[in-house]
Structures are given as C-alpha cells and as structure tokens.
Length: 308
Ligand SMILES: [Zn+2]
Image (cartoon, rainbow, N blue to C red):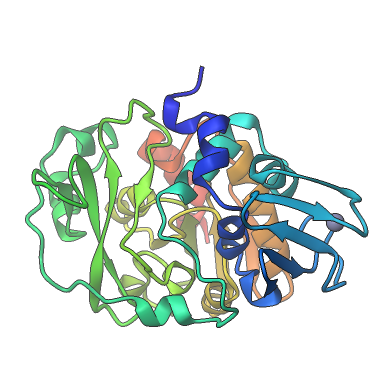
C-alpha cells in the first residue's frame, strides 16, 4: 500500500486541478467565471477555449469536445502523463507541497511575489546521505549542499542552494531524508519560486561546452561534476518554454532523465520539443535507476561526453 501522503483519497483533497494546470503553465489560457475555469483541453490538445471546464469547489473537470469525459484530479494527471498509479501519486504529492496558485490570469504574478532568500544556511556536506549517492564531501561542499539539522522549512532535509542564471543565490530546496521513499523523496521548494525559469547549476556551466547533460535532480549534476562532465538539473521532469529557450543555446544535449516511465516519457517529449533547434539525444538509463544510482563508468558511457 502507498504511504499515507501518496494515497489518492488524500491527494484528491490536497491537490487542486488548477495546480496541475498551473504546473504546466496553462493557467494564462484559462478564464475564471464564478466557480468555474474555462480553457482549451490539455488532454486532447484542442484549441476551443470553452472545451475544458473545471469546477473549483468540486475539484472536478469535464471536456465537452474531443474527450467527452471528465473526472477528478487523479484521472486528469493520469490522462495527461499516461503514467502509472505510483508515478501519478508521487507527482500529485509533489504539487500538494506547493503554495496555492493564483486564478487571476496574470502570467508572471507568481514570479513577482517571489522573494529571494540570500542568507547562507549552515549545512553538513559530510552527511551519510551523500556517500550513498556516491557524492564526495568536497563536491557537496562546492555545491553548497548538505544535511540541515535545524527547525523550519528545511527540517530533516538534505538541502541544495539555488541560484539564478547569473549565479546570485535565491534560496534553498530540500529533500526529506526520512521519507522511506529512497528513490522518490519529495522535494520542497521555496514559496513562489519561479521554477519555470530555473535550471539547477546553469550559472556554473560554460555556454561553449560541446555537450550538456540534462538530469532531473541535483545529485546527478554533482555525480557528473565529479567526472568533469557539465550538467544541469530540471528539478523535476517538466520543461517550460523559458527553459527550452535556454537549452537550445547548447549545441548538443544528452537527456539523462530517470529510468522510470515518467522520466522516459518526459525525455521523449523534451527531445521532440528541441528537435528542430539543437542536437538532443536520450540516454536510456537502466530500468528504475537514477543517474546517482549508476557507477562512474556507466555515467561516462551514457553521457558520451568523452567520445565526442
Ligand atoms: Zn479533451
């Protein structure tokens, strides 16, 4: 049985359909009238602005054109991502932790509300967590990452420092150490973080690098950095138009997303989005493995970086 925070009965209550739409950058396409949102259907992809209707109070949706069906937030996430029950549960759980989304159709309002947190937090880079991931203490230190042993937002988390594209610190993201979900512990992000414009480690990557590796998670970035291979992390599997605009500046990309269904599906989608703009390839990880589960030799082989 799934842990309690991943059970669908809880997620149906905790996650709004609007937050799924917001996560995909779709809110600006929607109009709110009373209790309802109207917009084009993200499931079948039509452009009829009245096709897809959401009841905010009931947290239910219906598509009146292509799909002629509807349902709750779980069914919507499943239809959008065609992912397994476990993946859908994890995805929705990750949304449950985020701040409420705005309904006012003003794109960018979330970004404006974000206040960068520039203070340095005391983190322990020698935590056993990093050894399990094959990350050396000096690497964790260089990335301003470590276990946080205090109260508050980062309590019980391993944290990484986040920067904007110019390298200015903007705060920390944390992953709980004690979830029991070794592969897929939930990330916590600062309130209103403009996640769609952030690529983790971008400020350390040289734009003239012949090849950039794209991973989901900062741990993969750190493992690759130890091998001298430049990488950025999406901090998830969604790629926004802003992030795509940044990625196409690199002549060659290797998409090294996790070796699960969600990672592979996202990887194929990203490759299609980039196809006409840059040379993007998928690295197929062994089933169920993340980059930080692999040996150095496997990472080098999959990245293809030294065989260019
Ligand atoms: Zn539809």
